[in-house]
Image (cartoon, rainbow, N blue to C red; front, side, top):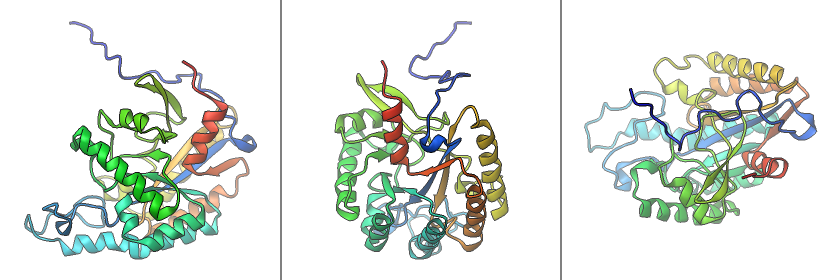
Length: 306
């Protein structure tokens, strides 16, 4: 059988000799919390999409005939922007936990008070697209146009241009090239393949990846076989943290956590998040940080080497 070689994929990474991150304060672990803020930018009949978004909500969709508004599903999303985001921000403020918003630009346009609160809290916004749409379904020109719209929009609503990028689920084959050509991004998070940042070359230019997570992510409440109770989530986060904290005595890593306002913004899950953060705060060698902070630290301590 002929051997296949795919040079555009890296199955090796750092291997058994990962770099010493030298996190600030000699931390054993960098802990980075993300809130995906998408409410108001999802697929919707009123926005001319011809359908209602049916993913990542409190109940499975598909009950309403195609082409009609799903009023129940719309309201499940509205919960995130009306209630959930404020509860999450309260919990994070209580534990003084810096946070990154994976923000869809249109969602923040449609809720200026949330955009204002994000800026006031000192959270950074990693651009999650202009809308919550799959970039790999767009043409190159469409993707480039949406990227420009998103940057301009977030600068207007939050007062700062985004320096990070994260697609819905995954990038297209053109996304990183477009990010590098745009020139203002420090990193993207469209990868799930490591526990430390790493460099790649795109169009002959260095580009930083700060990996994200699908496992320590509340999206598993909406996935078959995923989290059932809030304590499933809390226990999973705690076990992840404890393992990485122990390993961090000699080999520190980055732990990412993914939240959604319409999911963990519910009372029981927010309570579980608070329980996890209380556990974290009982450990002194933890760097709670924003994703932008991770990118800037890595670029300083581990600059690109060809």
